[in-house]
Length: 239
Image 1: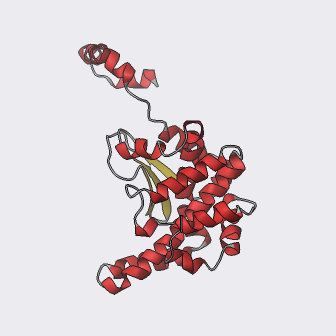
Image 2 (image 1 turned 120 degrees about the vertical axis):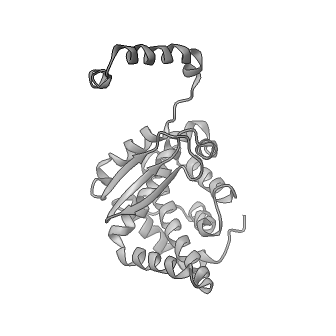
Image 3 (image 1 turned 90 degrees about the vertical axis):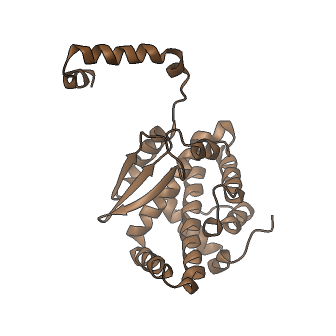
């Protein structure tokens, strides 16, 4: 990699300029925090259980605002956007978890996004209907409540899949991750009506998680056992 980098430089003065910039940076660069999110996300995506997903990861090297992780769909493929570099929301999100559980929490947040990709494969008709409804709701405001309910359904599935994965990955730290998700869904910085999954989280805390061959299977099984799911779209946890 170093050879390729140097080979691209056209002249010695440019090399000198690059070295001077590094020297000028000095202690300030040494103090610059390392963004852990891209490494953690890539580690999760590389797991064998996710290899069947039509997925790519796109990491932004620029300072960002807004959602640290999000999923897009481009030409039939899922694109996981990692916008955590110098993003205050990424640090605020991380601080929701206990220090000892932060890696597992980041992994679970990544699995939440992968669950959205999974749904495009497992339940393509649901996602197609959701995208169509979103387009129509822009012109018909009376469709907004239905749109919010359908989005909550998908967010609920993604949260439960993330928690199922976290419990299988590290049972000892799982309770801390569940607590972090509860704080996440209580925090107005991250959660609006469309992402309010608190009733599902409260039921999971009370009744526990059921198991499946994969985290996605576990989410399907758990949600089926905790139905009627439609009430999750309209009721809030009594906590």
